Each structure stands twice: as C-alpha cells, then as structure tokens.
Length: 369
Length: 129
Image 1 (cartoon, each protein chain N blue to C red):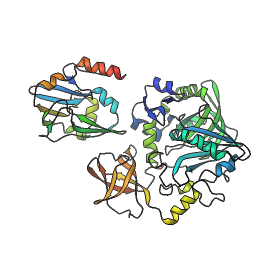
Image 2 (cartoon, rainbow over the protein chains, first blue to last red):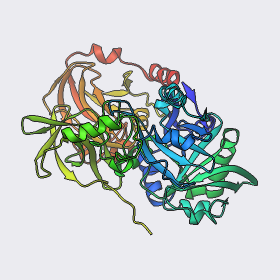
Image 3 (spheres, chains in turn red, blue):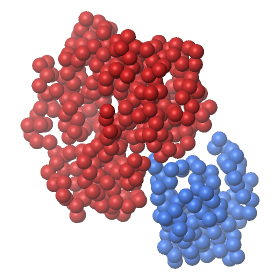
Image 4 (tube, rainbow over the protein chains, first blue to last red):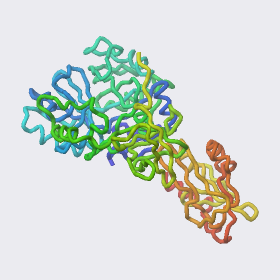
C-alpha cells in the first residue's frame, strides 16, 4: 500500500488509517461527525496528496487536453479551474477531474484510484500532440483548508501575484502563492476549490515541505483548524451532492444521467473522447437519473441497496450516510428517469424497507457572500 | 490500553459476557465502541428469541459501516436493554455497565467457560495494535 508524505503526521495524530485508492489514508482522527461539523462551522485540514497531479506542457497543451476532456478548456482563462470528465469511447466515466489552466501549462487533478489507469491512457492520447506530459503527483503535495473560517485563517499567511490578494481569489480560480507560517515560506500554488460544499482553499507545495507546512498550519491556527479524515470528506461531499468515483461514477455510468451537464460541452467545436456516444445516448433518451432522498428511520441506506416502487425495483443507492448537518439519513440513488417526484419509493436495507422522501439536490448549500 | 474488566469473558468479535445468577449478560467492549465510533443505530432481538453461539443477535451501525453483534453463548433472550435503541450514548458512556445489550438464559454452562479470559482478550487487542 502506498503512503502519502503526510503518513507520519497522521500516525502522530492518532488517526485511524484505512486503504483508499491504493493509499493508506486517515479515515478519521477522532469522530467523523465532529470533523464534519468543524468544516461546516470553522475550518478543517485535509491531506489530498493521494490524488494524482498531471502536468501537460507545450505549445499544444490546451488543445490536447481540450480534445480529451468534456469541458471547454480552450475557453478557460489563465488561472481558471473547471470540473470535467474523462470518458471512454462509449461515454462511460474513466474519471472526474479538475482542469487548472496555468500561464504556460495545464494541470489535471485526478482521483487516486484512477491515477495508474489514466497514466498510460493519457500518454497514448497525447502522443499525437506537441506536448510534454509529466506525472507530478509525487513531487507536489496537496493540502486542503476548508470551511467558512478558511479565508480569515489563510489570508494573513498567503501572498499571491496572479491576484492582488487571497481574499480577491474567485471561486474555482488559482494563483501562485507564498505561504508564510511558522517562520518559513512555502512556495507553490493556491486554488479556491474543494470537495466539501464550503468555501475553502487547496494548497500545492513541494512534497518535501508538506509535513512542516501541515504542522505549522496546525500550530498557527490551534483550535480554529481541525485535521479531518476521508470519513468527513465523504459525508461533506455527499451533503453537497458532489459525485464520488466508484459510487456515482464508473466506466459504465452515463455522466448526463449523473446530472453533470454543467461540466460537459457537447457542442464543443472539436468534441472530446466519448462525445459521440454521449450525444447518441441523449438522442435515444436517457434511462435513469441521479436523485437525492431523505431516508426514513435510523438505518443507513448504503451503496448497492435496491430502491423499490411497491413491488418493482426502480433504482439503486450509490451513496448514503447520516447527514450531520440535516440530522437525518440521506442517500443518492440512480432511479428510472420517468419516475414522478411524487412516486412513493422505498429502499431495502438488509430486508427492512425504509421510505424515501425525494429531496432537491444539493442536500446542503452554504450561504454565500 | 482499553479497559477490560476481569469479572467477565470475551469473544474475538469484541462482545463481553457476564454471569449474573443463572443468566448471561451481553454487551460489547469499550474497545469495540471506540473502534466503531459515531454510532447511529442499534437493532436488538425480541425477548424470547433463541440464539446459537456465534450467530448474530443484532446489528450496530456507525456513520461508516454496519456490524453484526454475535451471541457469545447459545440460549434464549430473556431481557433486552431497550433504552439503548433511543440513547446510544449510554453505550459510549458505559459499555460494560448500563450499555449492556441482552440477557441470555444459557442452554449450557460449558460455552461460557470456553470464552476468552481477560488475559486472552487483552492479548488479542495487543496483537491488533
């Protein structure tokens, strides 16, 4: 099992470690619920070093990435970030990624579990272009600071030159960054992105400096910043109805059925891999839709549990958890597209039926401004 | 080191069993409660249910996962701690006391004696570390 550069920090903090995407990662330091609420109310600190970071450089970098991913990379500004999908020829999802348009390169942040599968695939698809492809996952560390308190915490520490100040950094924008904390300056990038449904930032620094940065941030912020594991990351993203690869998305999932149209530009002049298959699926009529539900009772509906309308199976749960913010069990499920949102549905939780109440997505959205 | 009282016996799956008069009181250990963390739900059997040692008698669910509760001994359920279903914190506060789950009228005395002693169980916990 691989370890991130922060592994020793997690052990020192007494984290419970589990396998995720081929890495030994902290699922929680103490309580998932407390870590979740810390991000909703203050700020949480996350190790994201397990995620893959691919850099594409060269004259054709933008065009090459644009020809592969679903979003419109050619029309992105320098310093802008967009969500996109990487599809197979059948329109199924190979991965969901963030595309960072840098002044002279494009950075892709991919899921840990898909990194090995994507490496040869990207190399092959980029071969025809005048680009240099580098897997920089090992050398660049990624640490997230998420929550309503993130800006006040980081703004005094971070200086930027692409934007006048960290507070001026827009949502889904990035900048170069010098993070000054604990008597040391860390040189890297910062982005206003996250996977929690809160305001927040992600910091990119040399891997060799990740441990000291993590500890310096903790020391500087004290009680205002709580280390959070993947358990809280999962319940946070679920409340925000953000898809998780391996749950809502896989090689057979149709991203239009997953409700990800915002990241898919079917009319892009040069298309993308899987574009034709997606267009055809849309013309032929989509089969199912990803929907959100509150689950009646105390039992948690989890991935793989069947959804019924009376005696008929009409769907399957992809993710479910108790929602600390809503104080109720919630679930995402693929259900037949034609179902009316007044249809009475139930989930079968190990032989016990629980009523599902249709709930608009996301389950939680932060107050802005 | 987790608390392991010496007045009772244990299973590999972290249940405890305590002889009280002619009944066996059953719960889960402090270690198990800590490992599960973020408890959300417990399902316990009805009074009168017949159990076989090693078979599930209920389930306990945390934010991350659901786990089965295993009967340490065979017998009939004669009492269920119904307060747990409404107040799981009791289990966190007092796993070896007020957090008991069921009382079993055992069908044989021999099974209890074959369960892990405090020392055996502690050795298992150490191996886990």
